[in-house]
Image (cartoon, rainbow over all chains, first blue to last red; front, top):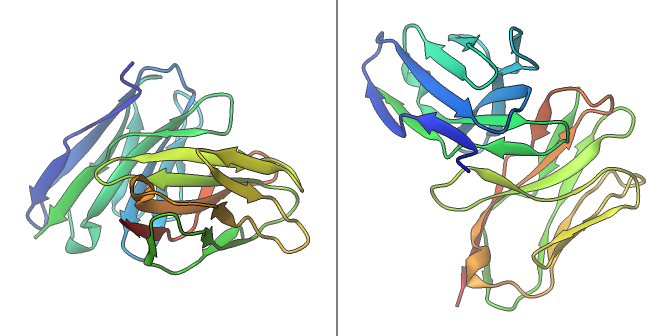
Length: 111
Length: 113
């Protein structure tokens, strides 16, 4: 049982480059989330999707876009990366209960 | 809006010591409260939760009681082990069961043999 799978695990970008972080879950969950984790700031919600076909902004959406491609997949795109987007990114999903299931994270450095 | 204030870290304890990590919250209504744990190199995983006032969540020897009168959800363990070394996050889910979970800043715990 894979749970929540994120790719890539590590990425280094130059300022201005674009990239997409991929996330997939195999638990048939309706809700999916993207968080970023920064030292001293905990986890902050970037975007979330309550169901297939819907997305909503979280606390820190600027500089990001998302796509809920289908029920399984929820991708996060950085169109023009900035050093302030250096962070660890976590995808999560939630079924009918309140428990979030997290992926193992993507460590992104923007130089 | 909703917020979670968590004990500043890092916290270093000797094996078998008593652990308390403080967490207080601000929210309207009756949120659900959670403790998540993050082991090195991994994503967060749910440690325990409580959904109403005076509920006690427990798991792996950890406990936390939902105290509405003090808006607190402190994490405790009577005798910590080296394997408990991790980052601990307090979190709340909005009273109306909305989609967003609000996290505290995390407390890094290191247990020394």
